Amino acid sequence: MEPAIILLDEHTDQATKHMLQTVIERKRKFDLAKRNHLVSIWASMTMAAMLLVYVYFYIARPYSDSFFDMFSVFVDNDNHFLFLLATIGLYGFMIVLKQMRDKAEKEYQGLRCEIIDKSKDLWKQESQWTNRHKVFEMMKKNYDINLYHENK
Image (tube, rainbow, N blue to C red):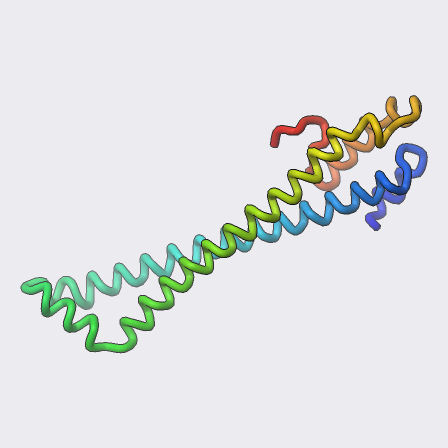
């Protein structure tokens, strides 16, 4: 369990601490998925740009007289097909990572909103209710998790 959550002894009970720990773990999972997706976007766009530049300078310009000549030169070399296949593969991988990011975001936002909805049940005692803002501030400051509002 996170040290900052362990220090919330008087402000929360054990079940609430577990929920806060789970939302932190899901936030980290979402951040990792978001970063991986961003890297895949840049990789696939870079690969596509390299393919287009290569095709333009080494195939389109020298053989611009005929489309059939350009097509023949492109198809004759196996490396061109592998380059195209790698670019398409990176694009497909980017889509898979986008789906993983969306799933992680849905899980994170769902649990975050659940904590917000159940805040009256999680901090039942009057002393806990009046001090819950300390928990919210700690979550915002340490983990960038907003528990004040349901909107992102």
